[in-house]
Length: 117
Image (cartoon, rainbow, N blue to C red; front, side, top):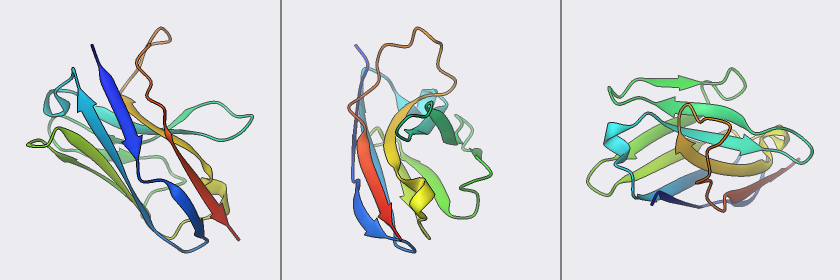
C-alpha cells in the first residue's frame, strides 16, 4: 500500500526558507513522476512542482525560481526546497505521484506552511 508522509513545514516570515520532505513507502519514487501539491484554505489542491523519472523538473509559474524539487533514490524520499517565501505560499503541502486521478486515495497528512508578512 502506498504511504507518503510529509514533514518540514512551519511558520516563517516572508523571505524565509523551508525544506519539505516526503518519505515514501509502497512506491519507488525513482520509478514515478513525483509532485508536490499545495492547498490553501478554501482553494483547490494545485500542483506546484514535478520531478520526472528522467530527473526533469517543472514548476508552477508562481514558484518558478524560488522552489526546487529533488529526490533521493537511495532513501526513497522527495524534497521541496522553498526559498524567498511569500505569504501567498501559505498552504498545506502534499507529495504524490503526478498526475493523480480523481480517485487517488493515498494522500498523506500534508505539512502546514505558514508565511507571515
